[in-house]
Image (cartoon, rainbow, N blue to C red; front, side, top):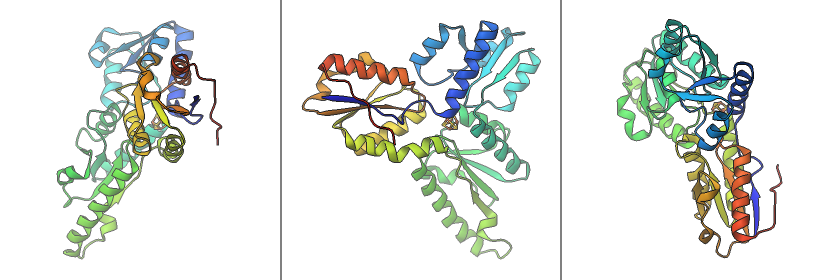
Length: 302
Ligand code: SF4
């Protein structure tokens, strides 16, 4: 049995940047407080905690005057910056520039009087940051079933949380376009395009991976998907793998690997989410090899 690590899996650019900012700040200051998990991967958090990272919640901010607080790649609503000013906290802003750009675009349309709809999960930290750009007024919908929450009598712009599934976004967009056309036919004042706009803000780092991940899953007899259980991107990519290969298993770390999964398999693939560090996938590969005494293999990039 050969075990191969997916050469395309692992940290996205935004997460690499956030971890890099955190490590450089800790080298300079010795300690750093991060508002929420820096990434949804407990193993990587443990590694950074050993260097001085402390994970905090918004309720802790009032006790951190004079300290450095990191804002992770997901970004934060404007209220967090206000609190930091109030408590004399130095913000180390590691918001992914892709997310900052989405925040800026949402703010622009909101200020121009549009209703903002966000395809995403209301409880996700990035969505909390996006909602904050609209003083909490944006409507969050996670599927086409929730479409009635959007008041289509108002001029509307649809955005997406950056890690959502493109298929779901397009279903929602098409249904909204269909409904808006019906509404606008009754009025001659404006076109459907003026009344409703859709901005596909799904990150290319996530979308670009879909095709390669599907191929990787099909090419292997068994796939072990490594991610933190809280990772939204991890859940989407894991489901994608499972659609291609029903023998796909989710683990957070090497110890969770079950040797029974590999019965009769010749090729096993190890892959992960954009929040999964490369070293962790290597660790899982080693666990599988130890369990099966398999020879080492590496998937070709391309
Ligand atoms: S998935 Fe995209 S938007 Fe999200 S942190 Fe990574 S690069 Fe940034």
